[in-house]
Amino acid sequence: IKISCIVTLTKEDSIKNKAAGWVDYSEFCEKYNIKIYYCKKYKLSSEEDIDFFKNENFDLLLLGGWQRLIPDTILNTIKHGGIGQHGSSELLPKGRGRSPLNWSIILNRKRLIWNIFFMTPGIDDGYIIDNRNVNINSFDTCKTLYYKVSIIVKNMYLENIPKILNNQIVGTRQKGIPTFYEKRTPDDGLIDWNKPMEDIYNLIRAVTYPYPGAFTFNGLNKIYIWKAQPFDNNITYPNAKYGEIVEIFENEFIVNCMDGLLLVTQHDAPNIYIKDILHN
Image (cartoon, rainbow, N blue to C red; front, side):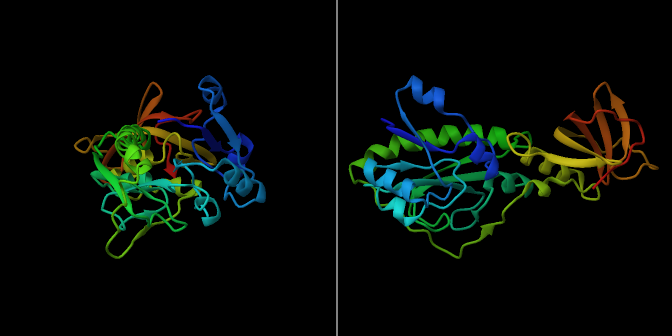
């Protein structure tokens, strides 16, 4: 499948728009002789952006990681339209909206249904082209889920794009009452040590790299916890508070939770001590 152009943001615009996981495509485009266009507005609403799409007269638009709705003024310039992606633990229209991978882990779902669909200016409401299921196991993080999504999207593209270009696919209309995942911000990574250990573990693995991360406080110091794992619920510290550090092993430490112990294996705390109380 020949890719003729990549439309993306500059690094400065990605920071300004808080676009997580920005990638520099310049070397990739140079290597494969692909045109690269840096949009003037993330919403693709500037006259310059609209004129660019009109002049290019693209056959198909493939969307990935673009955290804004694509307006009609852009979609109408594409011969076969655009293909969007979205996932949920249920069939669409259940689980439209923001941060589906993160929410699926936070809510302790065990599967992710990833869809490709014909784009509209609306929120994940287009006709479904194809979908595939992947497992969400207890070791998955947002990063490993992205690995899985990349594999199945690649396979769906290879199977369906030739058919779309030959006008052999019309898609399937979504049926049912929509539900929506809420928008997440970096502040939503704050750990509440009064919650069950599994909830804390799920939050940490849901917002780790490439996202802003889960965090807590040790006194006045803000600490990011990037990786952790449930440790044990038979070993107990009856006098310890929730969020109290009860053991330290080299640069790893164990935190007492309401229903067990959590082992923190990757963090950015400069100094940690037994009986330190982590708090929200």
